[in-house]
Length: 103
Image (cartoon, rainbow, N blue to C red):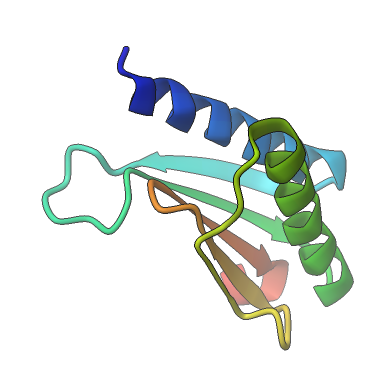
């Protein structure tokens, strides 16, 4: 395993833990490494039941990744209405949806 793979594995595990801490649901990890020209190696998708929970999921991920891995997202989009928030950690992109938006 390369250092990048170890870091990515740790990042994914920490993100999943953050989602689970605030009861995020239907977590899916998509491995995109076999696809040419993708923007990242992994997509993590999950959902919350309200904009409050979506914001809580994003906050829990940020806090946990910052504390445990000393990392922060390169970019975040969608926090204004919190129906769908994207968190970009470069190799890993997290999509947090409200249930009705994800459907």
